[in-house]
Amino acid sequence: MIPTQTKPFSPKCFFATLFLSIPFLIFLSQQTFTTTTTSDVLPGLKIRPGYTSYDTYIQKQLKKTLNPKLREVWKTRDWERKINVFTSFFDDLKREKLLKNESKALSIGARVGQEVEALKRVGVSNSIGIDLVPSPPLVIKGDFHHQPFDDDTFDFEFSNVFDHALYPEKFIGEIERTLRVGGVCVLHVAVSRRSDKYSANDLYSIEPLNKLFKRSELVRIRKVDGFGLDTEIVFREKM
Image 1 (tube, rainbow, N blue to C red):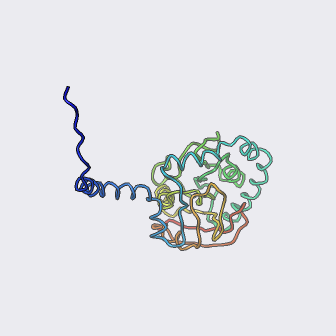
Image 2: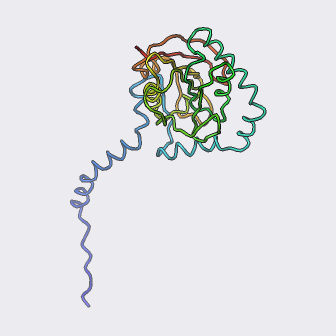
Image 3: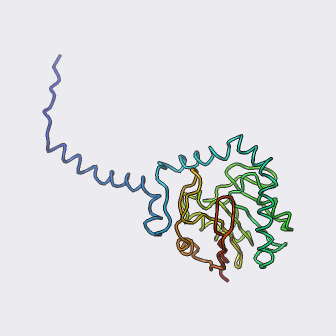
């Protein structure tokens, strides 16, 4: 049996291997930090670190949405209280003619559907919500980064979960894709204050939203008291 000879370590081979691996390492670094690009391009909007993959992000969101204690609270103690607050918001929008009875309306990130129920109570009967976890009959399953609807579907879209968007440009892009020309989007956001631990981004000014809504014009901004969110922003898709 011929003994196997071990080749001596070669610094030249080591450095050659290292040099060849640099492009791969660069590729990996770009994949790891893709969520930071929004912050770089849009000062005033910061993506929170710590998400190693999209699945990691989804699992964190589901941890809150599927929490049985929270879902019980949302459906019982918080049900009427939140509906009453949302009803007041939507009544104001109707008086301003930003929302109509005949509007086809979507609530994004609707959880158990308080916003949808409020829309129906103010007369907007053609309303539906989407969330990662469905809550029939008011909320169907849907990812707000990839809305399960055709282009130009809705006249009105409402959301108070912008802070949960890992990819804000996709979140807004899907709103503009599914809004009809002249359609209205209303966002409730927290400005310059941290939302809950499940938030994926922090907003420090309104300017990033102005830039993200590429096909819409800003209608108005006002202060609100919306369950930890302090600002209401209204956009209308351009004709």
